Length: 166
Length: 335
Image: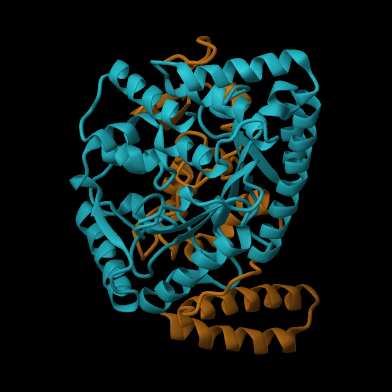
């Protein structure tokens, strides 16, 4: 299908719209989408722009055989599916695939972490996962600095925490 | 019941409305794209029960499948739901207060989208409205949240506050003077977006533009709203200056009175023609040249839309019937 705006390039962006009292779909190539202001994704929620979404994961390398078999225990999504659709399968996917998501997340959001409203009912499992991530980072630093005593302490705490999770 | 768009608001000569949307997902369910219609309805049921318990009788509940096509599209015309929400109705539920200022889309892109709209430039109050409902629902059903990543959403671009706040601005003078493109470039350098509301590119219908925040992670709701508000105010001032400049110009005066004549006398008015004439005449109304109440003019942006007219007429009108009905209503407004 050709772009409805320029009529030259292949349409890759499909946008649901309401035109003159009817539901309609607009098909655009990526350069017209950009020109018409649709490249700035999610100017409002619900502008579900398929095709452009997966551009958020250009760094994603093809998963190795071992990684490919890894699926989110929460919803069954593989990382490959997430990259292809540009959509996470469930909240747990953020934990399970965190390391592989990281480059894309920081490209979208910078190195920012959340500030602002805090959920009133943070799942303590989520909290524990966040702690595990922090400890793992500390452990890496300790090992690199050859502070092995400190590393041993961190490793034990990690083992305890992981034991609780599984 | 008076609707929010029938009321006047602050800076109403340029700012039509303020909107805040919060995306949330109920813990223990996969995200929307992976849900069967039955599970979507189960989430709707959880939310509906929580609302009935905490805010009894405050919301009207509608299964999107039960709505006529015109009624569903009319919701989208009034920015209450997204076009995408209308096109796949299965398993989706919509809740709103009778004045339409607070609403919920269940299982759109995310499980719950809370949306508040108020007239004029009123971002803080609008946020408070959505925030209160968010807290009540979070207590009752529990939303996915990570201390580092914030509210977890189906699309990773929205994590953090998962908040989109926007102001609907009518900028006819800036558009006539061809200053919007430059403005929109400046806006995007500041991390916000300015896009056409109805129709796209350089000529959105009625010169209506949406100014939205873009960043959701690493910025608090308060700071994001403040940025948006101060930029909206600055655009507002530019529009007002541009209007003064135009009012001195004879060709514009001619255009203004011709547009006024169209609204006052036309027998058939398409939505686009109506919006174009209205946006020009609004400059004259704001300057005190025509005695038409501003809030009634702003309301007509919503009430004169095609499917909304059909819904009011109770039948799907032909295009000509609809354009005639619109012309009749507009003549009444300007008589």
